Amino acid sequence: MNPSIEFYYFAFLVVNLSILIFFFFRTLKMLKKKKIWASCRNSGYLLLVLFFLISLSLLGSNIFTYHRLTYEEPIAVLDVKRHKHQSYSVELLQLDTCKITSYRINGDEWQIDARIIKWHGWANLLGLDASFQLDRISGRYQEISQQRNNRPTVFSLEAKPDLDLWALKKKYQWLPWLDARYGQSVFLAMKDEQIYQLYITQTGLIAREITATPEKNCHS
Image (cartoon, rainbow, N blue to C red):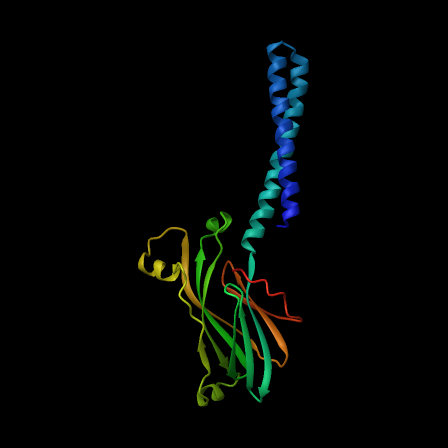
């Protein structure tokens, strides 16, 4: 959700809540003074504001839920340049560490493997996002016969995290909130002078071709 939208939403919510409290105490005050008609009129205002407040809360909740469950975070950028037929130079920028590495990869497609920790949906709503650990980058041939007959080009991307949730989940299967741990691969065809962006979502990895190099807004 856009931060400015969040600000205006909560500000509007606070204003309506203040109005609701005002009409509530005003109605109580009129009842004590036995002003029945005036208290009934204020009760109507009170119910109207309450209905509007509930409707606004439900709308905000739906928008927030959609925002949390459709979360995407860029985690890496790949810059591909052709070296020769079925051989490419791939520069990988990992945004969590600002680390840039280059690889010579053979094949028609690049492939990145990662380990994914997925949280339960209600944990996502509390602010927890899927966790990832990049494992390796490799080349992939479209033809099965070439894949069998050519030595694969594979490079490790694994780094020791500060908190290894993968090992933690493996050791303690009963841990709450953690939904699943699994390996996942994402691959796309390599094209000369093409830039790709890799994202983590609440359910795993996705990759897209992009038209320009994004700003190197590293997370660290």
